[in-house]
Length: 289
Ligand SMILES: [Fe+2]
Ligand SMILES: [Fe+2]
Image: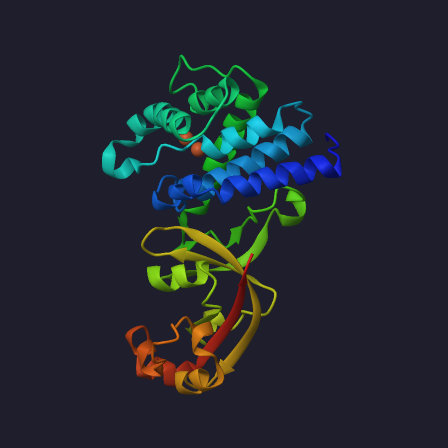
């Protein structure tokens, strides 16, 4: 394991943060690529995994080039399903990603090669010319396999109950696997949670939700864009009805705007009256991580 100093770790974490908060890179959220994840989330995972591989296996690499190359390796800004077939996409998107990256960022030859060669041998003449390129390609393969396995339906249940914390470069072992719950969300509540003003998610207290407890993690999945985000549960309160829940919770925290009227009947579009009466309801207070 390569020992990095605290200053170096802080420097790379800051670089990683500046990359995943960069508005140009955030555009990758709008597209869908590998199964069940956007190129944005995929690239975050690849960057973190590449960093870990380089450290763990003594690859003396330039970590800055490695992280930037990993974050930009799929910066093609289109979705393969709509534009061309899977094979064509696999062979062509490195070139498009490199073009886009050159247009939007100042990148050196090492980063260009990381992007261009990450699908080798599909684009046969784009060889890896550096250790950084080898490491990113390996990390990309590992993450693509993980994402493929996570999206397999197994006896009707998706096996994606486990997910990684992807916003921290360090302590990958500590954060490697978090057992959590996966909940689907419509686009507007997903964005309200993502923007930080909705911090209470409401659900029926069905059997499958009765195991939710403070400290657990939830992976919310946007039904429209298939983006995902991880939150941690702060508390779970149980109520007999949405009327009682609305009386006890702040409407802003439930996701309403200050000029909107908070009406418990709004939940009627999601759940039938019979189910609400049978199971009762949950107010799940969460925080983004
Ligand atoms: Fe790729
Ligand atoms: Fe990739």
